[in-house]
Length: 256
Image (tube, rainbow, N blue to C red; front, top):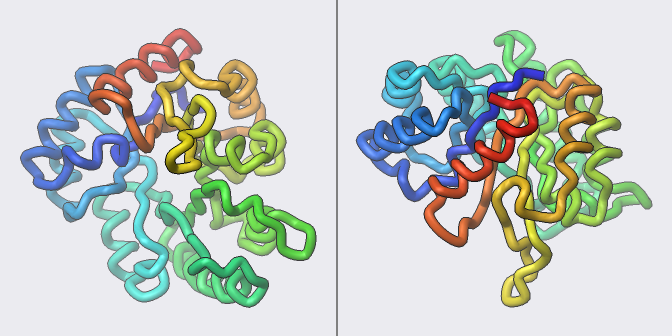
């Protein structure tokens, strides 16, 4: 496992709306010690972002784009990621249009099959990022298991999100083990219970929540996870401060 901990830039999405803001944000991230990033949550194009990343010695290891662009604008997705020098192209989430049916699942899997066939030609990997709803059942089996079992194991990687697995009622370690050699990037995300008003997780900095990081990190090492990136969907204070707290905690666990 590469011990360069990454920053999921979605955490600071409000500070990436212009290339000037992106530059200032990457400078801060780099000064914290981060060397790896995930790009998502920004409207910016790849070429100017790549110039900024190079300026601060940051490596992009995964991106997120909407499912619809994979379905309808695959050439753009390929060019975007190749320009960034990033081999894992993922969707930030697929929400099934409120319809977790076999028909919706089959339609999704057919699209991803086409994506993976093209990505094989281009040397890229499709990434699936889960939320909690992937643990709803179809034919007695979690949606995520259907996706795991019916996608190209060589070209479909899973951007497993530790918080959403746990929040969805599943076992994080079980899924890390189940996805041995199929997780190129994992989202390290922590939380403290539920926000009553929204029913969503009360997101926290790594080490300040309920997840067992020693066990998670060991499982990642045992199953050949390549990179871990820190993500915090909602921060109670300044998101840069939250990223720094998570970075500092993970350096006590062997990351750099």
